[in-house]
Image 1 (cartoon, rainbow, N blue to C red):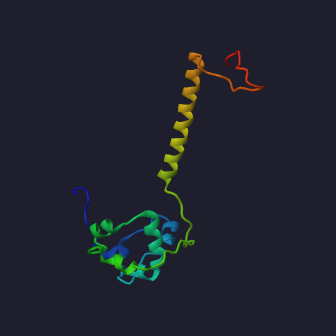
Image 2 (image 1 turned 90 degrees about the horizontal axis):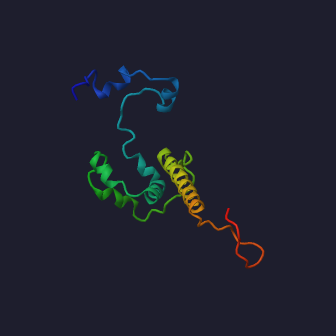
Image 3 (image 1 turned 60 degrees about the vertical axis):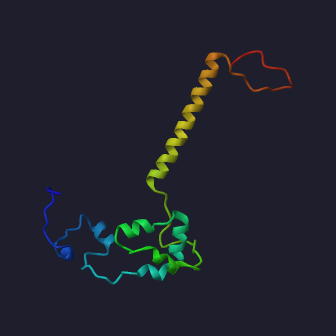
Length: 141
């Protein structure tokens, strides 16, 4: 990309980066050199990984495409592992777009219902609910 210029090697990120806020620095646990120490740390949490794969679906294609795994063989390590659906370190939250989609669907449903009711009232197809026996209502509402 022509508008990007390399200013430092990725391995020097901790030396040149400037956190955007104290909150960001706390979230990252501070600036520190990149290490390979956490590679494979997921193996310590196999029941949780199995639960997440059950809940959210397989991510093998993405892991392979991004270079985190070479092939599908990593799934063999989860064979026979019982999924731990207990509470994780942080509570599960629905993605904002999923919540927004649900709200949009609800609003559309209400809008469609209002249109149907208005159309029925305007065309004379509206019938008030029956009450007091089997007599049909004589007025439209």
